[in-house]
Image (cartoon, rainbow, N blue to C red; front, side, top):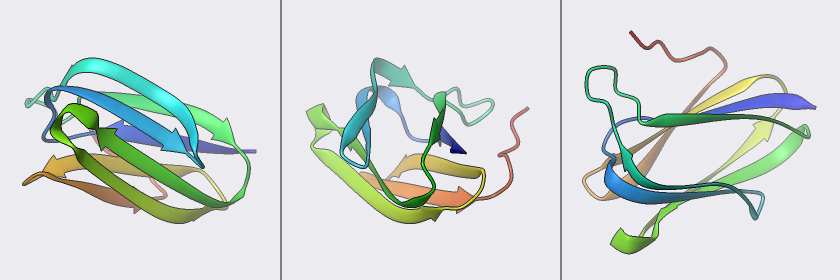
Length: 99
């Protein structure tokens, strides 16, 4: 098992957000807003199996969907932002810094 941390970062404005990891729903929240002072709306942390993985993030009311494929080998941090109507991902192996 390996730790996966997903941070919903910039661009969320009273959105409903759904996330699926390898096709399984892991998150749903309504009225999600980015706290602009720190650039964070919410985060999720879970343990999952090592190996190939895919994350899908959708804002169904806005008809915005994005996905990313990656390989889980060790602790992984994924930042998700909505920029100009598109889902953007940032993957790294160190935590994001928030004030």
